[in-house]
Amino acid sequence: MGWNDGQARAALRAIFDAAVASAIPARVLAAHLPDTPKGRCIVIGAGKASAAMAAALDAAWPDVALSGVVATRYEYGVPAGRIEIIESAHPVPDANSELAARRILDTVRGLGAEDLVIALISGGGSALMVAPAGDMTLADKQAVNRALLASGATITEMNAVRKHLSAIKGGRLAEAAFPARVVTLMISDIPGDDPAAIASGPTVADPSTIDEAREIVARYALDLPPAARAVLDAGRETPKPGALAQDLRMIAAPQMALEAAAAAARAQGLTPLILGDALEGEAREVGIVMAGMARSVRAHGLPVKAPAVLLSGGETTVSIGKGPAGKGGRNTELMLSFALAMSGAPGVWAIAGDSDGIDGTEDAAGAIVSPDTLVRAWTRGLDPRLHLIRHDSYTLFDNIGDLVRTGPTLTNVNDIRAILIT
Image (cartoon, rainbow, N blue to C red; front, side, top):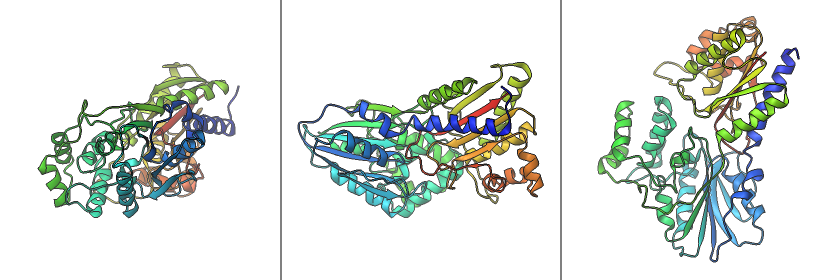
């Protein structure tokens, strides 16, 4: 079929939406539940998808006596029956983040060997559930998070530091629940689906070391508060592999979402090619690489023949540096870089968005690019290169009407990218 702009945009949005829908907790959680316990059932958790996970669990086990506390992001809370939901801030924690962590720790203390703890963990939990270690205050944790977010560190590196500055992450929540059995249901937003990295692994043994955390701080020249440096200097390690009984169940993950996207692409008459679920790097550099691949498909039929869709996931980074910064997240920045690299070449459209519905701190999931993106920007008096330099991609796409807005999706399997080549 011949593709026009409206058809291409509709196809890309259908592909993106299919990826997100595949990770909705109400659809996938019940199949992963353990046998019902002899003793009490305590439900805890943290993450952008965790309230929706709690609602799905409450609905799946109407005859099981259960209670608990789960933390999620503001506007991501949903009624979860017998399970209390506390909303807190992301990506920088607030007072509710600390309240949620203290309540969750209190909830799991004093349990017995016949009791069951179900931990509902998803991306974003690091900020939504915060218990500062040592003499650190909430303000100290907020300063650490801001420094990490602006550093360009990968999510794995950020979590290694967070775990060693926390009284709840890096397996310490599971320690607090002992001797109760802990079953962790996870939705992954991490490249490679490392359970120790999702929400900084509160119920998962931590393979990272305090020496690694110190090295990351030094490599990125992070300006940490004195109390945070004192915690790292004290050298208290997190529980290591072998120290905790682990029952970890991945109920949704980026690769699963990409496979759902591929099925949606085939339904549109397109050949999908999944490039990987763990593509990382600077957003603007990844955008250039993606454009090069799209040009190869169009010119040479490699690595796949058109009409095709190149699919990828993972989490890129945006290094702000010390200069001025506008509005935007990694997905809109990647898309603006992609548009510039394509230079208006015909027959190529693209979409990139965060599956949780929020790209960075803005109100959009991401953006869509068409062959006339740059022309429409220039027509409105916008300089795309200047917007990229200023990390102001959101403003450009907002002005030309090409932001992708989904609202909170109540799940989180990281970024979904699709490039349609005709």
